[in-house]
Length: 157
Image (cartoon, rainbow, N blue to C red; front, side, top):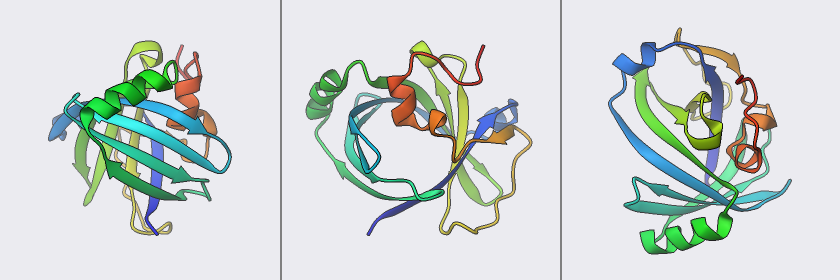
């Protein structure tokens, strides 16, 4: 079974910018989301796309299955998911021997910045960069599926 193990933090500084190696505009639409599973469609720079199924979170782990789909299909699925769609620019940031993803949200989530790091195991040590603040890994308000359904942005004034 495919598994995602991920920690999330609010971004509090700009030190990541000098370390970023690339970025892409992501559009994510949530077709279904409940306590058992989430079905997401994502486009990347409107050129590539994937359909993702995620199981219920158990701590910082959950089952994850991702399948490439044609961009034309993704556009139609994103339209079906409206208004539960979010947009963000994802920056790839190597730090401490891991690959961090810094998401800068756009649209109605403007002002929200989250850094994520995927791990191989839950107890894997992580050197925290000085540009991250509070950990929000277990705070459902910061799950992308929750954000896509919300008009307000937690922690942003």
